[in-house]
Image (cartoon, rainbow, N blue to C red; front, side, top):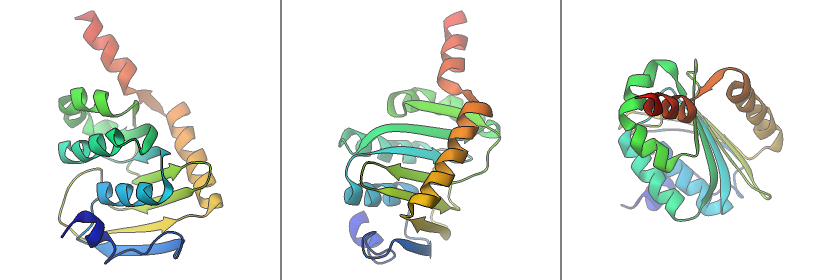
Length: 172
């Protein structure tokens, strides 16, 4: 079964159900992101996660290549830096800005002129077959609150990984 068919067994269209929760072992974060963008059209994306995987980045690469992502920022945790370093070449080609912070949050924000979609979830930006849970909201208030908090972490509590890694490479 295709991802688009699987997701409809767990989630309803955003226009029909603007607040929905799920607990499933059928969905991955990339599935949810694709599903949201298929409904919203091109949008800006912000994500926070403890870690990221090559499988997720591969899906993100193709979603971005389709033109549905206008801009993307990701916050990852400092403790996952070794894994992040290994994936750096792929991250650098897929993600505009990657930040490192002391963060265990798992948040997905998708917004454009017509939509504000917030997802608070248990899954990292990885691939797994565990039961994961999440809450999806199209509430502008929820989106504004989470956006403000993510922006605060980016501006005041994070290290811009692109800059730090580029400087390190340039000095060698």
